[in-house]
Amino acid sequence: MPQSLKTENINNNFFSGNYKEIWKQIFPEKTTLAEVNYIIEEAGLSEGSQVLDIMCGYGRHALELAKRGFSVTAVDNLQDYIEEINNTAAKQNLVVETICIDVLNLQIIKQYDTVICMGNSIQFFNEDQTLHLLTTISAHMKPGGKFFINTWSLAEIVLKQFKEKGWSRFNDMLFLFESKFLLRPARVETTSIMITDNGEREEKQGVDYVFSIAEIENMLSKTGFRLKEIYSIPGKKQFIPGEPRAYLVAEKI
Image 1 (tube, rainbow, N blue to C red):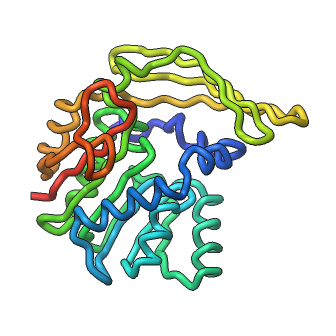
Image 2 (image 1 turned 120 degrees about the vertical axis):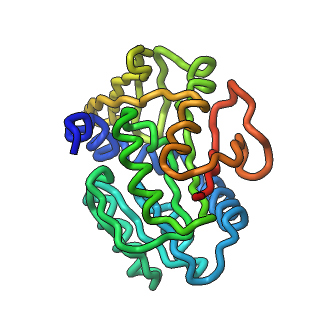
């Protein structure tokens, strides 16, 4: 594996600890349901269809898709998330195959009808790493299968939405961040600080690599995909530069 792929990713542990609970509050259930409904409709999934959810987090999409009768494989590098998915699946009598591994080291056996990469996760990697990941995904998708990417770090978004500093309140926790927009490669490096009401403090470092739509489309094309559509609201509103969120739909050639 090239050296640029071996480098420890600063984002690997970003979503552990207190941020795990913040992440759950950022996305209400209605957002997850709208995204899942769109994925099913756009991909034309039927009962038993094979779906791969990479960097799945606590499984909000994987578990909902399993409820609908699809065969789901959920992949994440954090054991806490994988254990939570397994526990929830057991309680709800759902079948979800889980894999705890860095996605850059993922070795897949199955062929999938659909792959999803949600929550800005595709932006955690530099160009070489992204091409490696896309190549792995493409090699294990059926022709005509759909690949869904949710992002808010496209250049067409960041150039308008970027903020150097900000804060939010999540239940008993104060969340503060400070970001820098850097070049060569284009990226946003962020320091996040979480302070609970009882004084517990946690600091995280993260980076989101920033690619333009043209750059993403070029990487998809190199790895066997055709970019079909870009939405700001899944399946309802086509993306306009400057909007805060994008959903890219690619098709395996």
